[in-house]
Length: 150
Image (cartoon, rainbow, N blue to C red; front, side):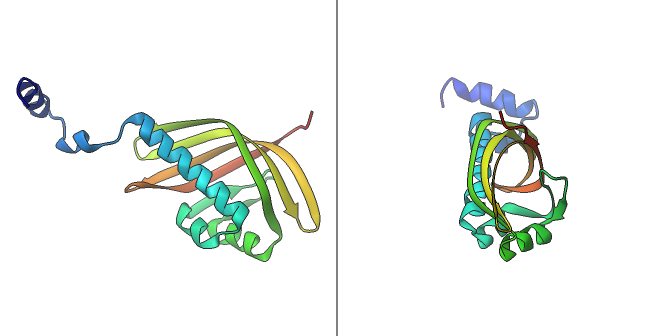
């Protein structure tokens, strides 16, 4: 380490945790959060219920564009029954913010969804709140607002 060793010792003496040295950069943390958000959208389209189960927190509150609020169990049941089938989710304008162990993703999305027998195309603006559990993120809250079509 040579000349850097005194700086490292000073940094540690001032109260910095050695574990901070191993932490990922803020940019890498945001990318991991965006990757989790993308994985969740993919699991919804593929109807990968096992994958979704690991990406959704037990205390999830999922608020749809029509204002209906569902728990994790209710949301998964809605998807399993086929009452709601996501055919395509194309997000854009994504922003990820990290607040300690909480991550917030905001953005817009174009969606193609089967609702019963109807195919619905819609644009939404959304907020997704995640909690970090170790090295992974789980969704704890989702709120979507339907946008007027041009």
